[in-house]
Length: 133
Image 1 (spheres, rainbow, N blue to C red):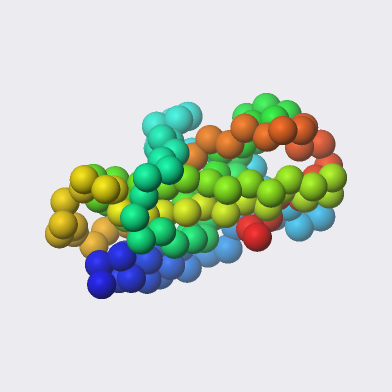
Image 2: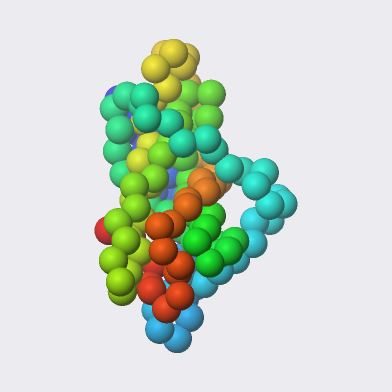
């Protein structure tokens, strides 16, 4: 039940921030973190429980092969995240996955935290679009 409510809260908070800005070709605009580079980065985890996809709000290009993706997630004491990336010659599709930590607290406060995750790409971004799946 807490995972479902946390996901709903994250969706509500994302809706309150408005849609991500985009450039003239519909690519999400690159924006910098308001709290300093890397301060909201989460370490990707592959041991999460009750996983579900989250909507991400924006991206920041760090180099020709590295992105930072911003999203809202549950309390980091209780939840973790990872990203799945599908690269093609024309697009980079990113899915952010959230899940409960295996040894995290059973009861968590329902709050949403802005977080980010670093993504290393196989090929340069170049003119490819960056989109959710």
